[in-house]
Each structure stands twice: as C-alpha cells, then as structure tokens.
Length: 470
Image 1 (tube, rainbow, N blue to C red):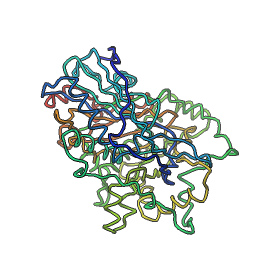
Image 2: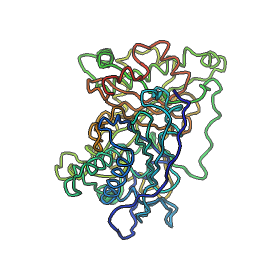
Image 3: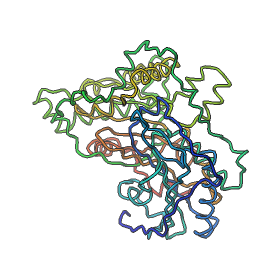
Image 4: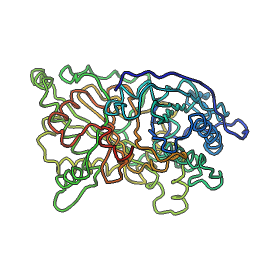
C-alpha cells in the first residue's frame, strides 16, 4: 500500500540537555571528500508493549537530548570558513524533531518500494542543521523512527554508533556507561608532515579535483540512457549467498560474501546492459558502454595497523573514514567473464585501498590540494554507462536500537542521493539467519532485468517474509 496520508502533529527542536560552549569542529580531510548529500535510515517497531504514543515520543525526545551531549556534532550546523571550506559550528542549535501519524498499518507498508512508501512520508527531509528525526505513529499502534543526516558529518559506522547510544539512553543507561563514547579527535587523521604522495597514481584514478577549469564531462553516450534510477528493497537467502560465493571461488581461494555478491551484481548489470535495446543502439553508435562499480572501504582498522591504543580510539572515531575504490569495464567483456574472474578483479581493485598507506596517502592528497574540493570519480563519471557504489551495513547492530519497546522488526537505509550513480547497501536480515536485506538504488531497467531473470535470488521484501517478526 503506497497511497496513505501522513499528517504532521508537531514540529520542534531538541537540543542537548546540558549547555555547551560554542566551538568549531573542523572537517577532516576525509570529510572534505564527501559532497553535501543527506542519508536516511528508518526503523519499524511493533510496539508489543502497547505503550502510548505520547510516552514513546517523550522517551525518544528525552533520550535524544541526552545523546546529543556526547554526540554534540549532530546538534550543530555546517557553515563555510574563510577558505570557503565547510566546517561544523557546534552551537547546540539542536535537531529538528517531527511527530506525525499515518493512516496505514505496519503490515500494509510496501517496503519493497521505498520510493512509494518511505520517501517524503516516513523519513524527514532535513531543512536545517545536521540531523532531522521523524517519529510516525501507525494505525496498528506500531511506530516508525526515521532519521536523515548530513553525510559529511558522519559515515554509516558513526551514525550506527549514535543510534545504538541513543537507544541505550532511552533505557536509562547513564552517559558514563555508554558502549561507545564518540571520539572527535581530528589529530587522528592529521596529514603527514610533509605530505607524501607515493604512490599517488591510484588516488588520482579514484578521486578528482572540482576545479573551476575542470573540463566538462564528455557528451553522454546515447546508448547508455538507462532510464530513471529507483529504489527497491529485496531479501536474499543465505543459501543463495553461499551459492554465489561458491561460484566466485577460484583455485580454492574463497572471496568474502561481500566481494562475491558485488562481483555478481557488477556482472549482472553488465549482462542487463548487453541484453537491453540500448546496447543494440550502442553497437550502431560504435561507442562502448562501460559498467563501473565502487566499493566502500572503512579505514578505521587499516589506520590502526595493529596499534591497540589507536585501534580503541579509531573504533570510537566519529566522522568519515572511508574510501571508494572502483573499476570499470566494457559491458560485453564483463558479461562474458566467469563470476570467479570478476570476483578476482574486484579483489584486485579493492586491495589497493585496504592498506594504511592508502588512507595516509589519500589524507595527504587532499591536504596538498586544499582548498580545492574533490570527490570520488565514480560520482562524476556516469556518462558512458551504468555505475553504482556498494556499501555494507552487515555489521549494523539493529537489534541494539531498542528504545524500550522491543527491537525493530525491520530496518533499512534510504539513500536516493541524486545524480546518475546508483547505490547498494546489504544489511543483515532481522531474522538473524544469515539472510541479507538489500537496498538497491539502481536503474529501473536493470532492476526489471534482475526480477525477470533472477527472481529466485532477488526476492521483493514482504511482510510474509517478516511474519515471524510481527
């Protein structure tokens, strides 16, 4: 069911419960690589405790006010400094907090199509500040908690850390006993003195400076017009994941499930492009269609490099500590490869970005070029074929985001970030049985191809699948 109304009951601002002195928190060099985009996440609750909506809202507000004391960055606002770069003003302006109700039951939400059921309804549009929260009461007594935040301030790891802490505080955990105390020590990501660009070639292939004299991208390949990018949510069983991993294995070397699935999806997108009418037009135009895929790499463990003290600090570091290596290949060539060959190719381009030196070099690369902004190339190079980025939420602790009325029966991101680049986020299934939930933001033509040719793998998320959670 997508046709339902959401009525806003109240809009207010929740600030940290303790006063704090205004101060500036600079963006790290890795923060500066993120464009100004917002990311959303939402949690669905069944309210088996049969609490009143008012009491649940008050609990969320009070615990949020507590959480914003250690996580003060989420209560600030982004401003420009004298160099024209963004900085975070930690002034406790607070978080926009929306209370709403929807004339729909939890079981009637069409989670398979979040563009219809979630966008503009269950996650807030952030108008000011860094973080916005919306709490929506459903006809059945269920509840949806949606959050939208500025990605420049926090990566997925940091956001998850905040959400778990917020939930702990809702259950009367004291500030001093939180599982994670966020670390904002920007010196952990200070560039080397002097900055070193060895080897810089790999970074130049991954990132591009956004200078005023940057040449415009080439004319889009008319054969690569794949229609609109839309969002869908599927689940994939652990049996299918194991089968994909087995097919991706070569010479006894078993890639991770994430590498195996990423390789499978990259090859699938290439195959869909070859099979489409646009590919036939591409042959006529004599222009190759190139499929690109990037994979998000978290640098916290890499930067620790075995140092236990630094590892403890990096595990609590709040901000962005990611890199996005990627590769591209003509779709007909990619489609002809075996899955094990594609998996090996994914492993090779990931290997470059999974070292301490890569993140130190990336940090130095940004420092040398400041204040000229930069961004990962895959965000810009969307003109000659399909491209998408695979992240990973498989370590998310959704069962820990329990505000006192039970763990969420479902959780997902919602990240229609605009532009021509897709986004993929695998998450652990709430069943806890090894299945994955997949948020896919890809070209509709490719999603249609997946559903028609691989329906046994990409199964639309339904409440029947989640039935034992309700």
